[in-house]
Image 1 (tube, rainbow, N blue to C red):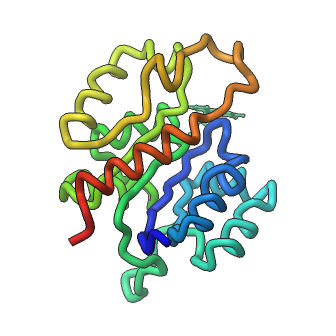
Image 2: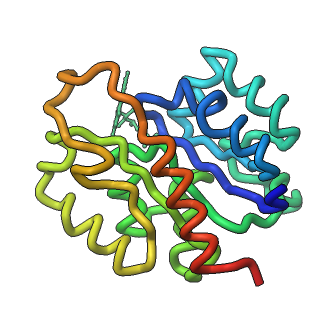
Length: 188
Ligand SMILES: Cc1cc2nc3c(=O)[nH]c(=O)nc-3n(C[C@H](O)[C@H](O)[C@H](O)COP(=O)(O)O)c2cc1C
């Protein structure tokens, strides 16, 4: 049993439809608790597919996509690590700039700025996203702040848009990165 809590943040990118079966349920089986937060766009997708309710049922923790009201308590427990899976190009760009205009970004921006808990990001992007002129500087800003990226030719070769429709998210590399991040920054 791990006994640790993952803050899983999901943006509206391909592969999100598999997040429960491929990441959440296997980690729950390994003893993790998982508190899921969705970007507004990801919330629309997962509500339409019925996955939001299924994720809530398996994690037994409310899935967040809206900020709390000022008088409300956070519905989520403190987490030992954040993982943004999948992260869109849009989410990565905003995160690198510190733009916190939704609940998902707010949580991860705060963790990066405060240097804990550790943050793992899997940018689920294509060659066109990565060709955007500010992309490399966004990645450099995040790694410079201690964010662990799951990115590069070995784990996620870049393809032109819509040329690799069935490409699988590198789930084992993401699990390994989360374990590595926790090992480097053990809970206090
Ligand atoms: C079917 C579909 C698939 C998409 N897949 C991706 C993707 O894999 N990566 C990505 O960066 N953006 C992807 N997008 C674009 C994002 O959904 C879009 O930029 C959205 O505004 C992201 O919002 P978010 O970052 O707040 O979740 C996709 C859009 C659609 C409609």
